[in-house]
Length: 126
Length: 398
Figure 1 (cartoon, rainbow over the protein chains, first blue to last red):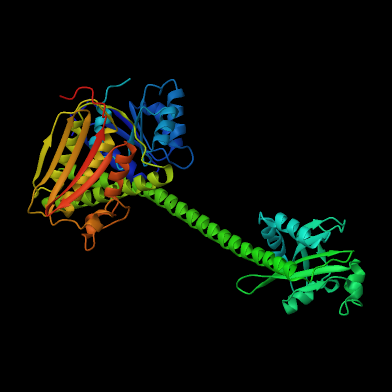
Figure 2: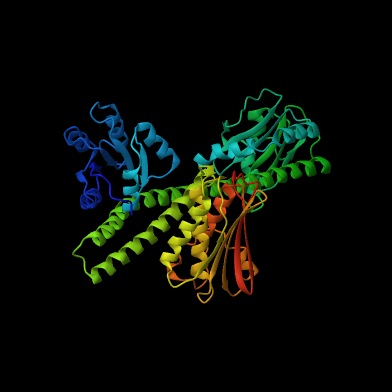
C-alpha cells in the first residue's frame, strides 16, 4: 500500500455508477476529497468549480467520451494543470497512444487495484 | 437454372486451356467456327468461341435450342458428325443446316465425371470436311473429356476456397467477439474487485465478512487473469503476435522476485525455491517477461506434485538470459509435450480451476515476440520449462 498522501481533490468519472462511487468512497477513506461524475458532460460541468488536482477518467462512455474530456481539461485555463489519469478497460498500445494524444498523463487498466490507483496519485506531478 | 448460366460461361472462360483447345479443334477439323456451348433442356448458350466465319456469336450469346442439333446430342449423349450435308441421308432435309447454312458439322457431348451433362464441343463450316474418321473423333472426344474434368476440378477448388474463406471469416468474427466481450467484462469486474477491496478497508467488518470479501477478491483475480489471457490470445491471433514495448529493463530480477512473491501469496502451502541473479538493463518487455514467469510458475504449481518444491532459476551469462521453472511429478508423455503450447489445451482430468488452457500458449507467444525460445523437458520426477534469449543486451549484468 502506498504511503499516506497529502489530501487531494479527485474527480472520478465513470458511466458505471458503482465503479465511480466505489473508487470515490475508497479515496475518501484515504482522506482525499473525491467527487463522482457519471459521464463526460457531467465531469466538464463539475470540474471548474470543484477544481480537481486529479481526474480518474473512464474512456469508453456514451455521449462525451473520456478522450474528449481529457482534451477539454488540457484546453481549459483552470483545468490544464490537473493530472488526467485514464482508468479504462482498454490496455492496448493503440488506445494508450490515443489517450496520451488526447491529454491523458497516466493510463490504468481495469480492474485496477487500489494500490495501483494510490501509486499513480503518489507519482511526481508535472 | 437460367441464373446459373453466367456462372457456367465464366467457368469455361476460367479454364486457361480452352482457347488452345478450340484452336486445336479448328486445326484438326478445318472447321471455321468452333465453340463450347452450355446446353440445358431449353437453352443453348455460347461459353467460348473461335469464329473465322463471322458467325457473330460471343460468350453469353444464346441460340434457340430447337434450331440446333445439340438438343439431340443432349438427349442421346452421343456425337453427331456430318461430313457433307448434301450427301448425308439423315440430315440432308433437316432444318438446322438450312438455317445456319453449313455443310460440315460436329457436336461432341461434354459430360462431367459424375454423369451430369454440361453441353457440347461443336463446330461447323459452309464447306464439306472430313470429320468422321477415327483420329478426329478420338481427338475431339478427348478434348470434351478434358473440358469436363477441368470444369469439375475448378468447381471443387472454388468450393474449397469458398469454404476456407467462410471458415476464416467465422473464426475472425469469433475472435473479435471474444475480444469485445473480454473488454466489456472488465468494467463490472473492476467494480467487483474494488468493492471487495473496499469492504476489507471498512473498520466494522467482522471475520466472516472478511473471509467472504477475500474469496470475492480471489475470484475476481482469477477472472482478471482469464480475461487477460483471452485478450492476449485474440491480440496474438488477430494482430500477428503479442505486441511488446522493448526497453532496457532496470532490475529485471526485482520484477521476477515480485512475481514469485505474488504466487507465493496465492499458494502459501507450497515451497518455491529461487535462484535469481541480478539482471539490469536487459532489452525486453519487462511486463511480458513477468507475465511469462507468472504463467510458467502458475502452471508448475497447478500441475506439479504438491509434495515437491517448485524452482525458479534466472541467469544472465555470456549475453544469454535463461529463465527456468521446474516442478516435481511424473514425466509428461512425449505426445503430450508436443501439445502443451497449443491454445486451449488442457490436461485430461485437469483441475477445473486450471484456467482456459491459454497460459503456456501465451508463454510461447511472448517468447516468439522476443525472438527467444521456450523449451520443455520432462523426466521421471521432474518437468522443466526453459526460456532462453540469446544476444540479450543486458547493460550491467555481473
